[in-house]
Length: 244
Image (cartoon, rainbow, N blue to C red; front, side, top):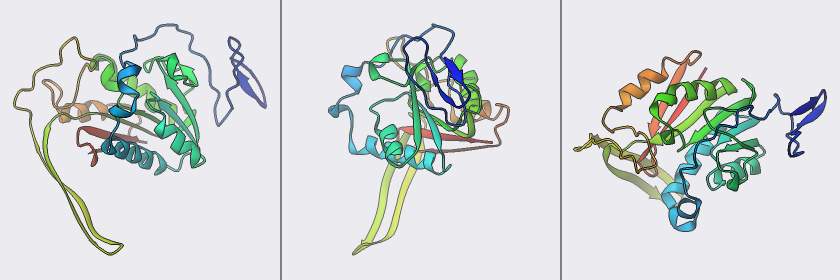
């Protein structure tokens, strides 16, 4: 990545320019790559989405926007709903993905992010970290957190059973009550994930209680506060916000 003072960095391999926004982007020196697990023909089509999954995208956007960011790094581009929405609202968004077919700004492994520490206001990574072994999880989160000046936001599956209902009371256009109600149950059979599955781990599976995840996250240097909640849309994922 060639860089001159006052000039945006340019990739010496492909000639692509990366706008300088409070930091300098660089290409990964390592060519190590994870094997792409998510098959685009199965996940990135209309039948894979739903009203609930679009709700998760809104929740993700809201968590990001609460930090009032000027720059955001999204790891795992998915269907680009989030990056397009944030860009529409004037946020400068860069994307990283392991799959070059999704045309990310930079192709890289989440465990080897080719950007400098503190390069972005917010770094986010939704429904990605369960695709790497848990042995790599803590170090990966620590590295992602280091890239963010304000906060690192991510989500992973929470497969504990939940009895959920939504209480809403409206009069005309006035929304007087709008509150999700939940009761969470442990899984009756908390068997481990099979080797044929895409996920290495999930909250609620054998060996991965929420208490362990929170305990491990709290050990990351620089983390001053951890906010987390289950999605009010799908009920099957949990959002985490790591703040300084």
